[in-house]
Length: 492
Length: 96
Image (cartoon, rainbow over all chains, first blue to last red; front, side):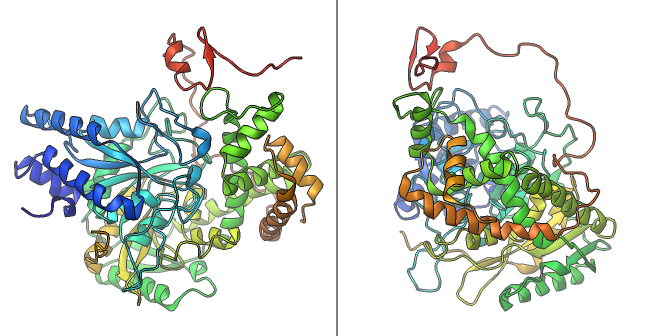
């Protein structure tokens, strides 16, 4: 039999439908692969083997009864930022201790409603704050990718490093992820996988541990553009429990994949030609433009003139919202409490021992920029610059249907290589953070390998609620790029 | 703007984070470096620009009907409590 774990989601669902294999067999194949790979990769922080087997059995019965859902029997990985009923959820922070939700996040509930099952919970940067998965309480994820034969451990990116590594290493058919400044798209680009952050409001945030509420969005990481469309279809949808969830009709995302881009106009923003951009990234971008031209699209230069201010804006807005969101971790109602001599000291010690260094740094920055006397100079100004950034996109989208950019300014770096300087680490999100600030959909997909054999990604950004154009353009690139490279399974 | 150690202690207090004394000076440096990088926002002309408070455009956020939809399940609410007793959270003494 072929290696079931290597199948795409679409192919696996097809095989299940044709009775080539059962969900139970598929699930066993993944559990075997996880047992073999996880000691080396650290992608899963919790493996829910019994739970997955029970779900698979029930799913096979459902299919046999002719009641198969759109994702019936598909084993997925769930980022440990999504609350899962009865299964420990930690946000990879010590402060959540052994927190075990008594409810299910809307996004995971939607996936399970459609027949998907959960193999386990995936590693991430603590509270999704990071670009390398090095701030997790469970330690970093190791990328399945290596530079040629060099055995240096590389980052899979972050914060959804576990999700990206698991999909890339065939440890699930697809995974949930979240993206506040690039946490779906940067890890996807680093691991040769596809990740889409949909329009802000497409997916309910209910039951997802909050980082920065005006920026956080859930989305999938998958093996192909089509797989990502199928997963998003189930994850998305209006939810009365999240007041920012959009009451908009869901188009057929899968049908948008493969639609012709003939006659579409694709924008190429001047300002994304950043200083010191590696020649390989520039060449990849030029290649992407050429592919879309060949597919019949028109190419137009556009200006997004406030691009260089996006990251500094983000590093006010995100920590400010995080400092407010994370105020709830006081050790009183859940998580680990460290008792002090009085209430204030109990709070201070609980939080000091529960939060890691990067999270503490962001809480302090956020508290500072929101504090009396500084609010106008920092937070209010950042919100105004954010309006400028959104306006740049509004103007550009009067002339173009989608925008093409590189996904990241470099290929994956080694673990430990950038952990010394926070600002250097923040620069990873330079191409992705603008879509969060403006609330727009953005998809990263693999397009080539660099000279060292590591994946490089392109990003397609669309108008608000126009994921269909994003999927159409992305599948045109996917077809032209014919990216088939996979990491060697050195952990076997 | 450079952040001094006094400000770091004050902000840590506001954030209810116990910061060991030996972390104060390095934290002041780290925060100053990040804020120095953020200073470039002062170059942007934001005259007359309305601050963007939400990524969602259009009408104001909807209000839901003021009805109880869930509840009356204290055991479920207390499930993850570090300390609980008789259907209540147990917390340190708040009023001396």
